[in-house]
Figure 1 (tube, helix red, strand yellow):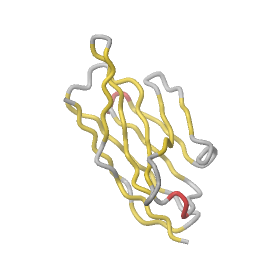
Figure 2: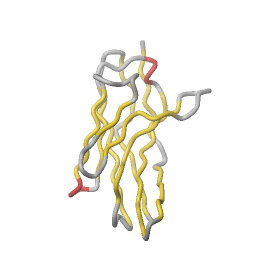
Figure 3: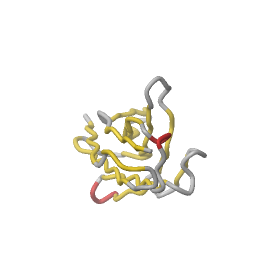
Amino acid sequence: QVQLVESGGGLVQAGGSLRLSCTVSGNIFRINTMGWYRQAPGKQRELVATITRGGSTNYADSVKGRFTISRDNAKNTVYLQMDSLTPEDTAVYYCTADQYVLGSRYNYWGQGTQVTVSS
């Protein structure tokens, strides 16, 4: 089994910054793409950013230029640096990780961390 634990959420004023962390533990063999999704009240969960084991990144248009995803493979941790935050970034942020075992893909999620941006 694979466990993901997020940290770093909280309350911040518009224009401020937060850094989220997500550490993977358990059977971490062949963890590949990791990423962050978010879900605001009354809205569907949406992609924020992803990063492959090799460091290739992908961002939602709404966060490009403001958010930076990175990872430390030695620490099995993925980060999301969030700058220039706006109230529209308020959501529960979820960490996700893909694992490939014997040709099958398994997707894991963290429990989520709340990010609230006040105007």
